[in-house]
Image 1 (cartoon, protein in one colour):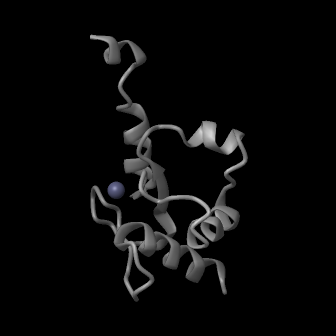
Image 2: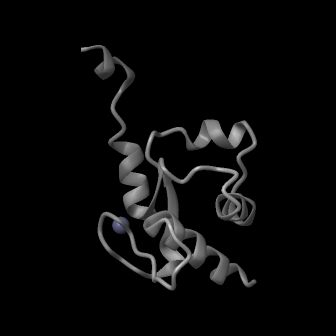
Length: 97
Ligand SMILES: [Zn+2]
């Protein structure tokens, strides 16, 4: 399977929870250009999960499709919305208020 097909299938699976034919889009701004879409870690733990060997790119896509990794806390965002998600991450001290 070509990279773009694998990416499309994985992002579709994250959004719909199934492997039906679907065109993925940014769940925030709705842009649907596959080239700018990426996987967002809803709980801001992407860096930590990569450190612990979750993988990136093709490796991550395949693990998601094999259900080795749950997609419950993943979403599909474009790079801009993914960056904004990171910038808007609540600071640690906010959790203690
Ligand atoms: Zn977006």
